[in-house]
Amino acid sequence: MTETRRLPSFSRPLLLRILAVLALVAALLWAAWVSRELSEPRQQIVTVRLAETIAAFVDAEARGAQDPEASQARVLAFLQASERAVAEMGSDGRVVLVGEAVLAGDAPDATDELRVRIARQLGQGGGQ
Image (cartoon, rainbow, N blue to C red; front, side, top):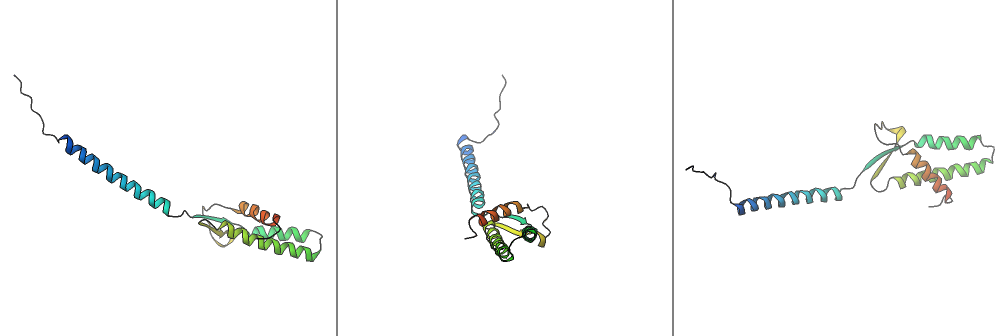
Protein backbone atom coordinates (compact mmCIF):
# COMPACT_ATOMS: atom_id res chain seq x y z
CA MET A 1 0.00 0.00 0.00
CA THR A 2 0.99 3.48 -0.54
CA GLU A 3 1.84 5.45 2.44
CA THR A 4 0.76 9.04 2.41
CA ARG A 5 2.90 11.45 4.26
CA ARG A 6 1.43 14.48 5.77
CA LEU A 7 3.44 17.66 5.66
CA PRO A 8 3.85 19.40 8.98
CA SER A 9 1.49 22.33 9.21
CA PHE A 10 0.40 24.94 11.65
CA SER A 11 -2.34 24.05 13.97
CA ARG A 12 -5.60 25.76 13.25
CA PRO A 13 -5.80 27.70 16.55
CA LEU A 14 -2.28 29.09 16.04
CA LEU A 15 -3.15 30.21 12.51
CA LEU A 16 -6.32 31.93 13.74
CA ARG A 17 -4.33 33.75 16.44
CA ILE A 18 -1.77 34.96 13.90
CA LEU A 19 -4.53 36.22 11.59
CA ALA A 20 -6.26 37.95 14.52
CA VAL A 21 -3.03 39.74 15.50
CA LEU A 22 -2.44 40.81 11.89
CA ALA A 23 -6.01 42.11 11.63
CA LEU A 24 -5.60 44.01 14.90
CA VAL A 25 -2.33 45.57 13.74
CA ALA A 26 -3.94 46.56 10.41
CA ALA A 27 -6.92 48.11 12.23
CA LEU A 28 -4.63 50.09 14.54
CA LEU A 29 -2.56 51.37 11.61
CA TRP A 30 -5.72 52.38 9.76
CA ALA A 31 -7.08 54.15 12.87
CA ALA A 32 -3.80 56.05 13.30
CA TRP A 33 -3.86 57.13 9.64
CA VAL A 34 -7.50 58.28 9.84
CA SER A 35 -6.80 60.21 13.06
CA ARG A 36 -3.87 61.98 11.43
CA GLU A 37 -5.87 62.85 8.33
CA LEU A 38 -8.78 64.24 10.33
CA SER A 39 -6.72 66.15 12.88
CA GLU A 40 -4.47 68.01 10.44
CA PRO A 41 -6.20 70.97 8.79
CA ARG A 42 -5.99 71.00 5.04
CA GLN A 43 -4.25 74.04 3.69
CA GLN A 44 -5.07 75.21 0.22
CA ILE A 45 -2.91 77.86 -1.38
CA VAL A 46 -4.67 80.19 -3.83
CA THR A 47 -3.67 83.38 -5.56
CA VAL A 48 -5.66 86.50 -6.33
CA ARG A 49 -4.86 89.30 -8.75
CA LEU A 50 -5.68 92.01 -6.23
CA ALA A 51 -3.87 94.90 -7.90
CA GLU A 52 -5.57 94.12 -11.22
CA THR A 53 -8.98 93.97 -9.56
CA ILE A 54 -8.48 97.26 -7.72
CA ALA A 55 -7.02 98.96 -10.80
CA ALA A 56 -10.01 97.91 -12.91
CA PHE A 57 -12.41 99.40 -10.37
CA VAL A 58 -10.43 102.63 -10.02
CA ASP A 59 -10.22 102.98 -13.82
CA ALA A 60 -13.97 102.49 -14.13
CA GLU A 61 -14.54 105.15 -11.48
CA ALA A 62 -12.13 107.55 -13.19
CA ARG A 63 -13.89 107.14 -16.55
CA GLY A 64 -17.28 107.81 -15.04
CA ALA A 65 -18.36 111.45 -15.12
CA GLN A 66 -19.42 111.58 -11.50
CA ASP A 67 -18.82 113.70 -8.45
CA PRO A 68 -15.16 113.30 -7.35
CA GLU A 69 -16.09 113.09 -3.68
CA ALA A 70 -18.67 110.37 -4.30
CA SER A 71 -16.20 108.52 -6.51
CA GLN A 72 -13.56 108.73 -3.80
CA ALA A 73 -16.03 107.36 -1.26
CA ARG A 74 -16.85 104.43 -3.57
CA VAL A 75 -13.16 103.67 -4.09
CA LEU A 76 -12.59 103.71 -0.33
CA ALA A 77 -15.59 101.41 0.19
CA PHE A 78 -14.22 99.09 -2.51
CA LEU A 79 -10.79 98.97 -0.86
CA GLN A 80 -12.34 98.18 2.52
CA ALA A 81 -14.55 95.52 0.97
CA SER A 82 -11.58 93.96 -0.82
CA GLU A 83 -9.62 93.85 2.44
CA ARG A 84 -12.51 92.10 4.22
CA ALA A 85 -13.00 89.72 1.29
CA VAL A 86 -9.34 88.65 1.29
CA ALA A 87 -9.45 88.15 5.08
CA GLU A 88 -12.65 86.10 4.68
CA MET A 89 -11.05 83.98 1.96
CA GLY A 90 -8.09 83.30 4.23
CA SER A 91 -10.17 81.56 6.84
CA ASP A 92 -10.49 77.80 7.28
CA GLY A 93 -6.82 77.06 6.62
CA ARG A 94 -6.69 78.60 3.16
CA VAL A 95 -3.64 80.69 2.33
CA VAL A 96 -4.31 83.61 -0.02
CA LEU A 97 -1.32 84.98 -1.90
CA VAL A 98 -1.34 88.12 -3.98
CA GLY A 99 -0.57 86.87 -7.48
CA GLU A 100 1.41 89.95 -8.44
CA ALA A 101 3.88 89.33 -5.60
CA VAL A 102 4.69 85.64 -6.13
CA LEU A 103 5.52 83.15 -8.79
CA ALA A 104 2.47 81.08 -8.11
CA GLY A 105 3.26 78.05 -10.19
CA ASP A 106 0.22 75.80 -10.23
CA ALA A 107 -1.65 77.44 -7.33
CA PRO A 108 -5.29 77.96 -8.32
CA ASP A 109 -6.42 81.49 -9.15
CA ALA A 110 -9.29 82.64 -6.92
CA THR A 111 -9.65 86.15 -8.38
CA ASP A 112 -13.21 85.48 -9.57
CA GLU A 113 -14.19 84.36 -6.07
CA LEU A 114 -12.58 87.53 -4.69
CA ARG A 115 -14.65 89.68 -7.06
CA VAL A 116 -17.84 87.92 -6.00
CA ARG A 117 -17.00 88.40 -2.33
CA ILE A 118 -16.20 92.11 -2.88
CA ALA A 119 -19.49 92.59 -4.70
CA ARG A 120 -21.30 90.87 -1.84
CA GLN A 121 -19.51 93.10 0.68
CA LEU A 122 -20.47 96.21 -1.29
CA GLY A 123 -24.03 94.92 -1.66
CA GLN A 124 -24.31 94.69 2.11
CA GLY A 125 -23.69 98.39 2.30
CA GLY A 126 -19.97 98.08 2.88
CA GLY A 127 -20.53 97.14 6.51
CA GLN A 128 -18.90 94.31 8.35
